[in-house]
Length: 221
Image (cartoon, rainbow, N blue to C red; front, side, top):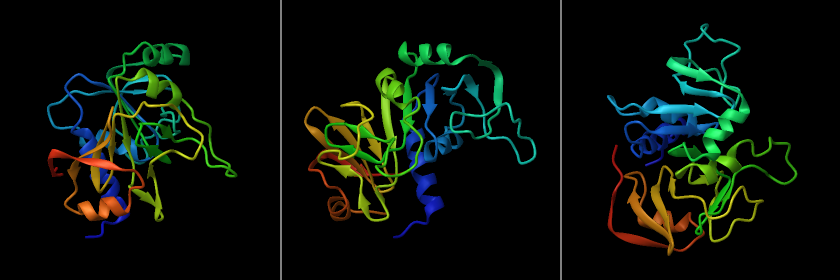
């Protein structure tokens, strides 16, 4: 079954949110990861941090209610929840580098079976630099890559990354619309399969060898 773009993104974001625990401090990357905040389970408190200097980030403001001074690291408008604090970049990265972020959720251009991540540069293209990603993937306790399984047919989960690396052996989990992979010392382990995919489809669109967990299950939300 084919999913439209909006449903794909929401599906991935909803699955990522299931990885959080009450009291988690979480940093969300730009793009698809920002949707994850919309799917935090009811009754769970998750504290969102933006590396440009805010902790206690709330939902996106309603149209017409945007504050031009309140934006996230990607330039998107944010709100601040009661108790939120603003600070400078030195403090923000002190939080990140000090190991106070429980999880970071980022997109990726490529990920490989060793957990290497490339998410900041396409040769020959004018794109932003890596931003805070290099610090986040090293400083956060859990690194989750949330991305579409392929990009216009191009495979993104590889045996070895070909693009410049953001960091080496940092990714703990990959969540796509097709499946969930955990990255272990023995490589990629398939732990969940989306009801919109199949083992055969995953094999055909993944350019890295992987093992199937004995308790691999169909992904559900």
